[in-house]
Amino acid sequence: MADPASGMMAGAGPPVLELDGIGVWLSGREVLRDVRFGIGPGEVVGLIGANGAGKTTIFRVVLGLLSPTSGRVLIAGQPRPRRNRSVGYVPQKIALDPEMPLRSRDLVALGLDGHRLGVPLPSRRRRELVDEMLQAVGAAHFADARVGSLSGGEQQRVMIAHALISRPKLLLLDEPLANLDLRSEQEVVDLVARIAKDQGLAFLISAHDLNPLLPVVDRVVYVAHGHVASGTTDEVVTSSVLTELYGHHVDVIRLHGRILVAASPGLSAERGKLEDSIDGATAV
Amino acid sequence: MGGFWSHVVEPGFFQSQTVQVALLVGGVVAAISGVVGVFAVLRGQSFAGHAFGDISAAGGAGAFLLNISPLFGFLGMSLVAAGCMEAIGVRRVRGRDVATGVVLGAGLGTSALFLYFNTTLHSTSGAAISVLFGSLFVISSSTVPAVVASAAGALAIVLLLYRPLLLSSVGDDIAASRGVAVRVTGAVFLLAMAATVALAAITIGAILSTALLVGPAATALRMTKRPGTAAASAAAIGVAATWLGCLLAYDSYYWPPVDHGWPVSFCIVAVILISYLVVEVARSHRLRNASARAGSADQTTAAAPHPGVPSHGGPDALGASRTD
Image (tube, rainbow over all chains, first blue to last red; front, side):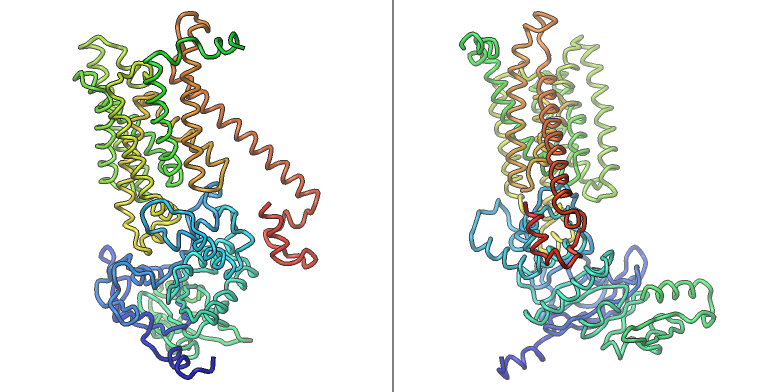
């Protein structure tokens, strides 16, 4: 639509999510310190960092599963309410045995009303909506299969449909590309790009490798040692920003559209810290 | 015809008040055990379910000692155990087995003490058999209302929590992020499970209660891929097995050793086990046939998780073979 008003809405509008100086202490350890970044409507943001850097903690804070020690979470400009369905969540793994009697369509339907009490009554509208969501993520052909028996990429799509059906403004994907083969990885990235474009939905996607997400992300939030640096890829993924974030010299090499991040050994004073930074950098 | 049926269903079977009470109590208990059992298996809490049975034995033995209705002993002890497990941390995956094990040990120790007193003080060794292995044919008709009420309560809880329970069996974080009070849901379900197992314990005995909770549920889970259908089938299988078990036990007075019936709990458990084995064998037979058919028809599509070969078309071609 060439409507100037809608153009303004997409560009401006209050951020769907804003983290304002979030600090988290867990069992006497500082896990996050002064984390601040925002996500605009329809924006796709990559949350990049090694295992243990604090990505999952950030997710748990945004979802309200963990109360930050300091700072505020704002959703659409408002403090996070206790129950919030404008943020959808797709975990890295779901705990379903292949034998469990739950079909893809049952799981998607639970996204609509799984928090409600009582047994669901059959409803044509509900069924149509579930079919529409399964269609939207390309999961219609395994709608009647047990969720536990699906491959990682297929489960990922069903979970995205599960999250989409409640019409959130922001979707959190926790390591959606972990343990996927290259083909499924590409399918998930394409799906995210399509949903973001068609539905104007914002995404926060965590990953330890930025490269597969490069075609789809508008901005990145880099996490290391509980600190973050956020901005466009060109602003953040530079030697100077990452060196400051990791506390060690980090080289950033751009090669054929890929970004390679590597620690420079020998420039660190402490042996322990050096290993730490290599861990972080190789996984980047 | 009448001659044949009178051999299967002994004359007087349906007229006997003992049998009527047994069929009613057994049916009600088997139905709720099947429904709760499906969720116990889904949530990975079968071990906790088994522990309730063993622990409730302490309550049953205590009730014999105090000469009160065993139902209240079983029920009370089982609910206390649920509270203890919840307090110790049965909701955490890591804490689940530890919490169950600690409470189970304490419960069994108490059972041993009470059963010992029953044997020495009252010289009733029958109490031990009846507490541990059940006594469906000696249930007094006065306990029927309490059994039906407890079962109805447990059923109401499961129906009320149906969707939150399913969602949290997929993942507690997902459920919590959607506004489900995961901890309360889990604790209330644990109480419903404790009550159900206590009922199963008076029906087929504390030790065998697991068979009624998990057996029909496991059979149903192999037969269907819908959660609601699984719960309903588990209830139906449980009821059928219990009634058939009662019938066999009644008939068993004519089996060797003549004039000494077989224990009804054994008959019920045997029917449950046989139904599980039949379904399992039928299922693996069907799967083998299906994969043989798919293998001969189109090896590539059957073997590959994704339709990687262009000549087999897109996802639709895969879908056609999947949804069959």
